[in-house]
Image 1 (tube, one colour):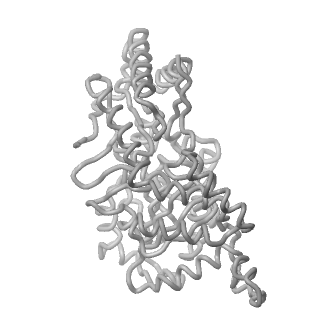
Image 2 (image 1 turned 120 degrees about the vertical axis):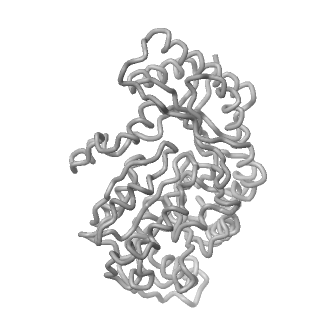
Image 3 (image 1 turned 90 degrees about the horizontal axis):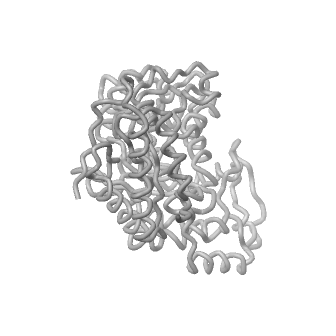
Length: 424
């Protein structure tokens, strides 16, 4: 028996050295390390600008406020995502309009189109497990004259854009590709998470990538957003510390959501080797899982790669045909009892107490429930050894076989679910 954790952070000597260097510099809050991390993110994603913040959630609240989203407005989100996607909308006083997903976990473009009203100000599309949404379809919708005709611009930024804002919840998808380019290029705004379990971590943190249309002044927007993360203050602490320029002003009601250098140092060391080392190792694990399960008749593969898109391999969301939620839970119990930590991504928001209290009901999102009920997220990270991967595969197969041996397939089981298209 082994003891395999679900998602430990990648901490090597380079990470430790970068953090120690920051500590010895006597500057640990927002400063040169954050600036360096932002530049690495710009380089990785080919974005016009990147603004580091203290969490994905903070970044989403900031960008919704930046766009002028307020009470009475609507923001379309998938029902199948982590709660922060909708909570960021609620923090702005607006209403999250939940829609169902496709069988690849991503938001349904057809459902999005049907949900748009004159109150719709933004769409937050979520790249589940690292798999990019179909941004071509979403962009076609928001630029459709019929849809742009519905848009009611009520703020300065809304008047400049003059259509629905497309935000990518890319918490899982750093390094994902769309048509051979960084997936971040397909949205107006892409927001990453650098939480402890993500492909690149800063312990806690996130980053906003801007790819707004050319009639926006990206340099000016970056400067404005940087001030917004520091309470609307004209000078950050690092600039003030250089001497002479101690005076500052507060220009507007901002937030205090900046990323400190001590956190940025962790991510900076990781991102420098992300494309050459860390991401290829994650892909290698995913492909080994696929090879290990592909001959199982109960196996529904996660989407990993097709003719347009490639995952960032953040999660390996295994799905099992013809099981109920209770059976899935028992399989998890059996897997974990053998020493393999697994997870579920995600409990659909309409199943959570708070969202149920707001009137959302899971019955309205059948595909979200189907994906949730049969999904098990397996460990996937660069430190996994070949021996550990083989052990995980065998442990999962054994647990599923045990469940099928002990239970007849119920009439209410998931049916007609086919593996996503995979091409390597």
